[in-house]
Image 1: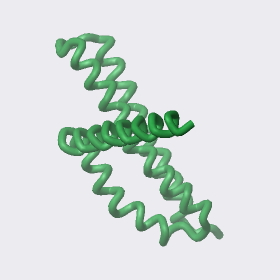
Image 2: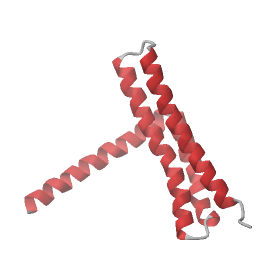
Image 3: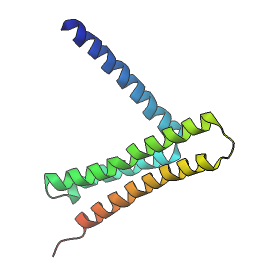
Image 4: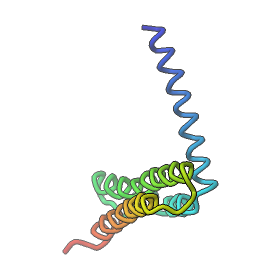
Length: 122
């Protein structure tokens, strides 16, 4: 059991290192990700003032955090596609456009949730 826990601990440490490296790369190389982090510095604290219940705050924070998560996935897809071939290809364009659409839908989702909770209920 101790051997398993030691191995699990090492795996968690490695995974954390790789995850932090990915965040660092995304922050350095992806303008959209930097913009989302900047917006998060405003939006996440604001969620505690906008939301009046724990559930509302969870909805506000969760809807916002979904945006950079999908942005990271979109960037990973784009990077993998660029590694395969940087030449224009209709399938590459299709995949990149679909990834971009996923980010847009996450932004629309967050916007709607924030709008619903900001507008006072009558």
